[in-house]
Length: 298
Ligand SMILES: *[C@@H]1O[C@H](CO)[C@@H](O)[C@H](O)[C@H]1NC(C)=O
Ligand SMILES: *[C@@H]1O[C@H](CO)[C@@H](O)[C@H](O)[C@H]1NC(C)=O
Ligand SMILES: *[C@@H]1O[C@H](CO)[C@@H](O)[C@H](O)[C@H]1NC(C)=O
Image (tube, rainbow, N blue to C red; front, side, top):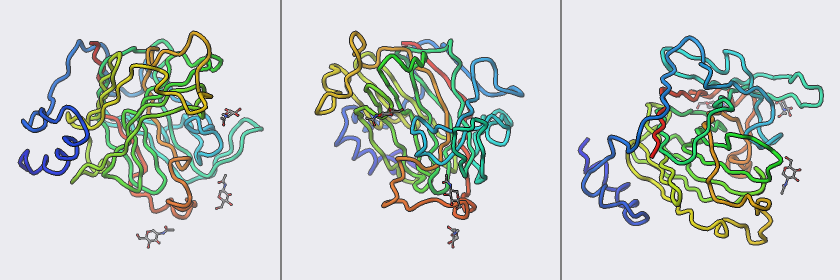
């Protein structure tokens, strides 16, 4: 496919909305990233190395009971195969060990960097293949490295999220606030023509600078968010303001998380219907696959 066919519609939208359209107009797709490579993971071993932790719980991605899955640490849900990290969801009833926790009808997996890894600013590049199937939500995202729940501040950056019903779109953005459910956000869902994110691997990248974040897909800029004043990120009633001394916008160390959730707030019933164990038997690609990760320091 010529670069021009690829660019016409998508390039046009970008040029209308964004700043860097000249680069696109010249056909310049980024092939390399600035800075020094400070972290690289190819998932080539037999098992996940000491940089990663498999998370098992039934709490969803912060969304508690709204999500339909339990994350388990079993191979069925998280494993390495042929140099790929595979996170897979299954329709199956799961009874958590904790007596107070509810059973759920789906299992899936979540992997995060271990506690001692965190990065402030830099370029995060991940080669991944997303999922296909109703109510599947593959996520590649950043959360605070030191998950101190009393710090009264929540920041999340979604490098790439997919919706299993719409495999040609990618959702990217950032959340800032007091708690996971008390934030304001800048986010977008972009449809990329002639692309099925569940069919092939693609390169998703975030360039995080002190006053700006930029998101790329396959080397093309798709979204930019300036980050000068925390006051721009407050809800109308300012109720999401983090506590004293702790307001700075995206200046704490964040770390990578990979998860595949099922259902939740991204799939309002009015628009998406509900998901039953029966429907889920129709999932055609209930997995999130990660080929490699690279992080560059600026
Ligand atoms: C699990 O599935 C059953 C049968 O479809 C349903 O009645 C039940 O409400 C579901 N449980 C949850 C937690 O969604
Ligand atoms: C957010 O969730 C917590 C529990 O994690 C709850 O106590 C709190 O009331 C919720 N806040 C809002 C604004 O919904
Ligand atoms: C599963 O997919 C088939 C073919 O697309 C469709 O006819 C059927 O209604 C689906 N079943 C459920 C339970 O969604």
